[in-house]
Length: 208
Image (cartoon, rainbow, N blue to C red; front, side, top):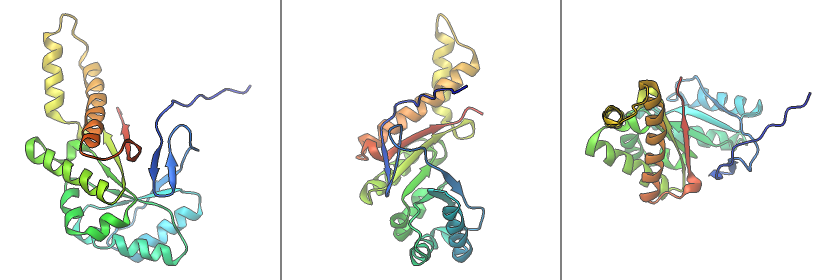
């Protein structure tokens, strides 16, 4: 029995020479488990993953030592004839790393960030704005992700408070799921407002 699969219609996102979205082929992305500060080992593993069929490879960029080696990793891949796009997985200090290591910002094809991890309040907004501005400057894609661990607690509290005042309040789990969606959509809109084109923005979420 053949089951027809209908893909949800989404806009297309351009990540270097790779296009992602409902009108494009399903893409394979993998992640290294090497220390990114070890450029030789990381480049070798990225090449191995690409040869095995990975079309994008994510590397962790969580320290100055790692950020300082991203451009070298990219060059090593070029020397090996491997043009697979590199995705930078940033944690709490992505804005600082992109600022201090512009070669890293240029070498990556996509920045992966969770707004809830960037920071809170005005300072968090400034860090988020800097990362988006950097992506726009270098024509890079940005993946905006949300999950339980990185959900903006200010947003969650605001929605929980509003739910309590509602005539028909929802269950806590339902409100939290809605908060994840709102967080992703608000962050994506904020990125567009800051000058990053929609075709450079991806939103992903996890409720597990």
